[in-house]
Length: 541
Image 1: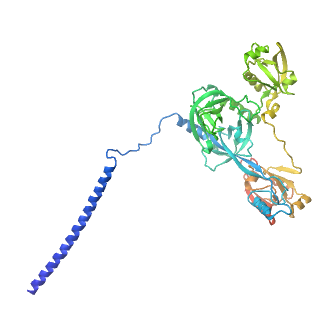
Image 2: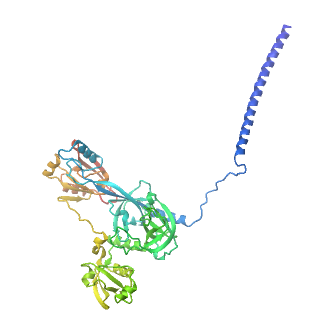
Image 3: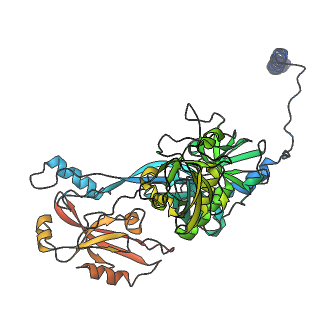
């Protein structure tokens, strides 16, 4: 009986355990089903809120769109460069002499050791130069030897010109030399010596005489510093004149293509190309009330740019003939008939004193009807004939004076020399320092006399004083500064200019060069070392 009871209890316990297990399992299944149903219900709610009839978008495989512009850009862009220019402003050091205040001496200390020369006792008011970024422009490679056409106003007055290539990095800059400039056409030629050949890709030149209004025009450049910018438009007008407020004379050598391809500051000097990818113009100017593009861009035709380029690479400048007269543009036939010129000509408005026309006897109100046997029915023709006549040659000039014809012999002069003041072409006089010698390391040095040493409070033996450091030179790049005293080069003592020359003559591009210099600071003169590798280009070093 007892055994039966125990068996019953065990059975009941097992039943309870089984029941509990079943209950728990049932609850778990219920929770899981509830979760799934709840999730489905939520998804159903979401679908109800979206667009049930929308079809997901699919990105197609990449297929290049067919157009004529992409191949042109790929062809020309590697030839377009960004040009960065710097000017070196002059600063006169204050204080630094006897009785100078502590603040002034500390300022001199910072000038010395942070690339700002003219420390105490170092020259008494000489004017060191500090780099001052001036702006950017564009240019186009026209010769794989590194020759680049740009605008004169981009590089004018620049102390350092550097170039970035389209296939180079943001920091990859190459120094460029200005070969020549022509303010009359606003064209300049620069050259990069040490760039790898793969970067020097020349753009093809087109014939601007084949250009017509309505032709496609593509401008490439660096507007506002945004490199490799491409804009497209058409040639919207030909033979445009753009007046410059800064000029004292009208410029007869600037006749522009007008384009509505967007041109902005920084595009200057970049190419305007045709649908074949040929250069048909050099972007030069805009007319704008806001300073930005308003659909009026101007490019100098390529034929004129090529003519200027060829003269610059041959002579370093452009020589244009002149006879020394000025005249009014757009002369009315009725006006000319009044002065006895029934078949046209050019009425002389003024004769420059001492010029070729003055010496030949040409007077105001004479009418010039031909030069060197070529008729001059208008002023543009006269300019073309005279400008292309070799300077120094004598030509017959036919005039009408008071109804009578006369022939005078006129010797052609250089326009740039004859009208230098009017054109703003006068060069400042160069100043020479006594007992100063220019050496090829990019510096000028001066022997130290006993009096000079006493004035500078320099008691060390030997040494030569650095009086000037060339802009963009090897010396400037390694940190030599005005008022440094060079006491050794490559561990060889320096006591005079001749020592510097002798050491220089043993150097060649690619050599290591180390300078030991004495520099002035708050605590007096202290040694400083600068060094570098002479440029492989063999340029200014």
